[in-house]
Length: 235
Length: 104
Image (cartoon, rainbow over all chains, first blue to last red):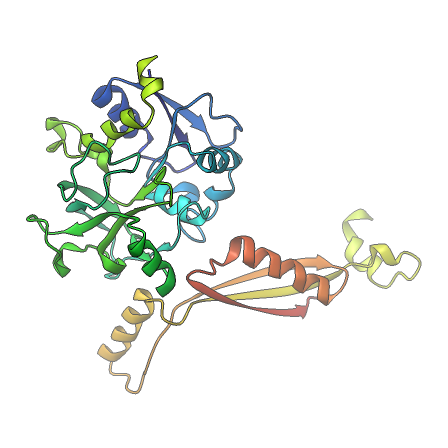
């Protein structure tokens, strides 16, 4: 049985949805990890959920990044463990320097919440192994600070290394200005680290895992985790 | 007595190790050049709508005021510099400047 550790910060609010996606969508075990602890409790995968950790004060993710458990998360990631950051979790991963760049206020200032289409650009990461290259997925976004920015060199490096995992596209999978909800550079919706074991994205796959939610396009991402830790799933 | 440590120690020559001084610190954080600043742009557009002419650019930042205790201004600056680099500013997207004055 795979154990997915979901870190709870004060202000996390997608933790329960993530647990449901793991339990009901995958039939695997989800456990909550309080941010003040120093143990990952044997988790095979660490998931930083969405929300407004520490009220988004200072910068989104800036304070959560120093929560006690983050030291363990950083060590786990550096050792190759799968770490996923969704929305606020993505912001925390950037603040913690596990992923490059930063997420700033949406270009249009406003909080955006609507469905978007993503194109899967890379299928050898821990969160996209069950996807096909170029596959278009529909799932919701809900964020005020989702505009991905990085300096020119970092951006060029991300593109050259193929570390852009998801891009905002239109329904047919083509780039379109109207498909980019927040002004992210190069339509970037999600990226990974060099090894592909740390993935961050702004959209919410955990809100798209059943017909009841209107869409199941988030499931392949969670299913990808099964392939990332086969020994845990088998045991 | 302990509550009035600041005033009682300040001029105490017998106990220099306790002679902390209080500083009023202001950290000004601004979006780095080249980083899009949607908030500044919106303010700029609003000013134009209100009829203010000649506003060439607007950048919006953040001001953090602190009162801190330190041995001297240099160590106060060192300390605040560390705070900025570790937490207060994100060097990827923000620049910061530090203003330090003696506090009352």
